[in-house]
Image 1: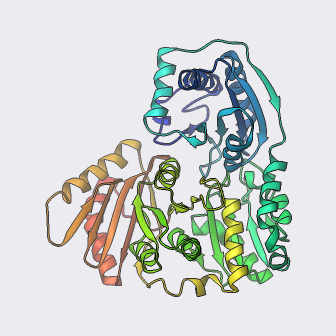
Image 2: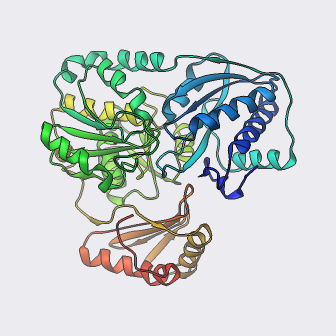
Image 3: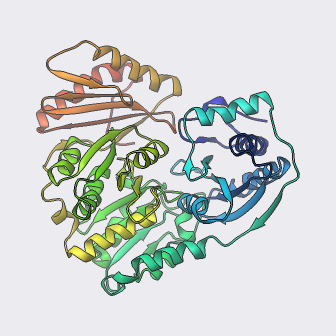
Length: 468
């Protein structure tokens, strides 16, 4: 069995298939998860759901997982190829289910795969994931004689949102929208879902293909949406919507062809929520800009900054009863009218609803968002060891108290200056260092960047660029 301990990350398990883990590991992880569930619930034969995205390795991994579940006495509810949000949906709607595993490489390259793990109605993270590793290392597995069934989860999922958006059918009927599935799992359901809501979308790269032949499936990187930009202009669409490999991340192109940053997108969504729920708590991660948090406060919301990570934001939304939260990386969480998890297809419908109901464009909705000089999320490929070493070095640099800045160590290090801020954090999903900078002036932006770059670049051994 191949099991590189680095795959056990903060909020999921992920790595390069047949390098960091193999199908024998999938079998063993399944057994560990059922052992974990039996201890948590006291159930000898827990019911769990199992789905997978478009990765080429998905079917092989899923077979081993199903066998591992049954070897530990579980009843497996197979969902087939689905999005991660549909996997989460199953934990809310399938009778008797106490957990589930979604086999997905998310937005990572084609040779990656991984596991998003739900217990009851939330995804586990942190020490709960490490507990699965400990169970595997102890070989402490429950035994049993399990069973399985296959269900159609997509029909109830589509029907759920058909009902929600039924009152908007007339407004949606002639609304021009282009969506880009990126050959990911969104293609399994987006046409049914959007047409059921009354739309007639132009759909790009709908056929799931785990080789991702047209572009990398990460809609938060602007170059991946270049074809979507062209199609938005061609069809005179009000918005272009992109999805990542498992459709829990969303990216937007406005009607002018401009790429909308994650925190700008959240501002549009949050403003709509606050209009209906004055004083609402809105969660944003540490990568979001000060201007977004200020925008939320100005319009009557209560902004809360929290750690990056889909499980961490999701749990914070639940903890403080926030109707909405999100991350710079395109994960957005609607508890308002929905279940509080990250579903990019649903978020896309909410964006279309906002545009259709207000009759405004995205630039018009953002006109009150103060201009700023900022970078996108800068993701630098490095090593697991180096990404943490660089963050540690920056913490040491800014540990010295100064009237010129203050340091927030909530997640990595975010340093606030009088005219802007800079962030450095280690990605929890890849060997990547994440940076972001913002200022009220170009000179300020360059100065803040240099404060970080003088430490980061020598440790990387090369200059930092804004492209990934």
